[in-house]
Structure formats: C-alpha cells, structure tokens
Length: 106
Image (tube, rainbow, N blue to C red; front, side):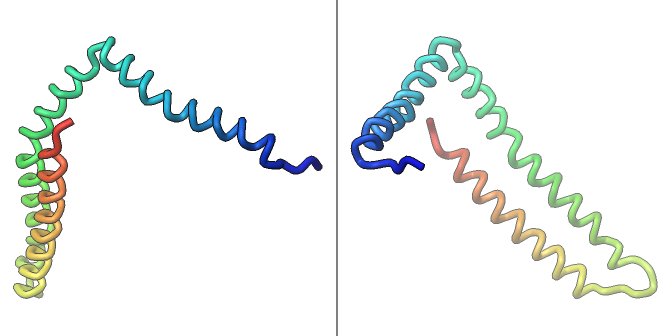
C-alpha cells in the first residue's frame, strides 16, 4: 500500500480547502440571484409572529395533560403544581432560546 507523503498530500489538501471555501461564495451568489433571501426574510417574520402563540398552545396542552392529577379519588395537588412549574420552566427556557434566535438578524 502506498503511503501518503507531504508532497502528495499538500496539493490535495489545498484543493479541498479551496473547494470548501468557494462553495459558500457560490451559494450566496445563487441565493441572491434566485431571490431566496426575500423568501427567507418573509418566512422569518412569520415565525417571529407565530412563536409566542405556539409556545402558549404548548403550555396549555401541558396543563391539560396534567389536569388528571387533580381529578378522581387520588388527588395530588403537589404533583400537579410540580409538573406544571417544571413544564413552565421548560417552556420558558425554550421561549428564551427562541427569542434569542429570532433577535439575530442575518
């Protein structure tokens, strides 16, 4: 088996780095020519408007799924409140991450 030495590896590595770096330039040029940036900006504004509504719906569904702990013979108020607060904490963290991502401008 032939071993790769520095002489044969350097041109291949240079070509690979050139191809990887030029692919972003070509992709940006294609995106500008096709008008994809305007479409992405429109989609981004729709996501910004819909994110709080989606998070609120997820929170309401989480409460409804845990409401079974309050009904019936074996009522567990502490378990209900704990699960709702944990769910609220998770949704708050997700909401914070989403709001941070949506605040980034491209």
